[in-house]
Length: 371
Ligand code: SAH
Ligand code: SF4
Image (cartoon, rainbow, N blue to C red; front, side, top):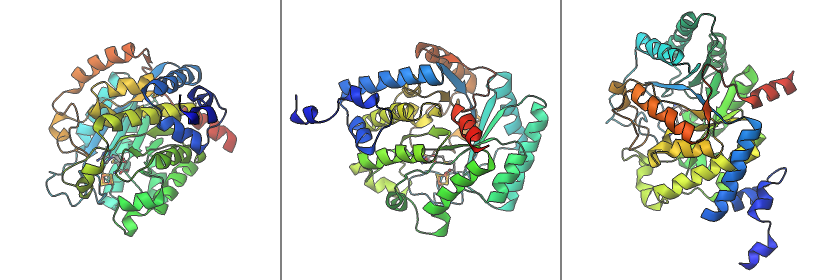
């Protein structure tokens, strides 16, 4: 056994601490395969005790790939001329929302590129009103993921029925964030952070997240990412591996990346450690995890994640929403995806929270404290 082991806490001691410090988290992230099993087991137990052995479905609709921004990592960035741009019609979107409800998901996620023009924002408001008409008295979870907006827009969408919002900080270290975005007012770290706080203040269940395995990113950065989520009282988290895309500026650093396997394992550890640190939040098993491992989402559910987002985007649009390479299920209709999903979730030991909103328990606790 190495000398340093005698001098520091064991993995077992660390996962059982009441609160984790940065050096604890770094130590967990650096764990070897055997040690990681201890982290996974603890996370599984925390999930069972604090949020239950249950997976909630959110029907994911990537309704448009039109984006005004130019994030260096993203395949649908504005300057990528190789992408055919699309915007699903309201009827197409409503049909998929209906599919989600009919299949007892009780929740949808509407995601797109970022646009702040009035034509876009009013269209979303009217879409939300149409969804409210469609669902009538049945309350459903509506998560939006459309980037940074003004307070007025966030409020308008909230009034129109949206109740959750996902806005990843991408990299909580400001210097790192700057490396991955153009240096202009449209890509401003402080503005993104303010937007997250605004969402919390308005009353949204607020989600954030990061990409794992980015070039230049260290274990210390990742530990800070998890502490960022904790310190900012986040209700839900979606995070997954960074996956390179050849039509992006960040592609030139691909030789510096760790292997896809390593990025996957690191993402899995991030999920498990986050569950240990934030026991009552919702954590998504993301598509990017599935991209690097065919059962990556199920593995994430086993170690602490409790939300999965089956892709309801019609197949004809899927090839247009390539944030990164090798996205799965590009030619698979949702029904086929869903039946195998059910079996695999059962294998992971969870039941499915059909017809349940699956509201983040942390959100309830946070709102209770506020009032
Ligand atoms: N435009 C919105 C939502 C769509 S992008 C926004 O940016 O907030 C959704 C997420 O996809 C981003 O937050 C980012 O974390 C992730 N993403 C983009 N490019 C990626 C890549 N190359 N690898 C992994 N995730 C990526
Ligand atoms: Fe646009 Fe979001 Fe991609 Fe950035 S990450 S380019 S905002 S879709």
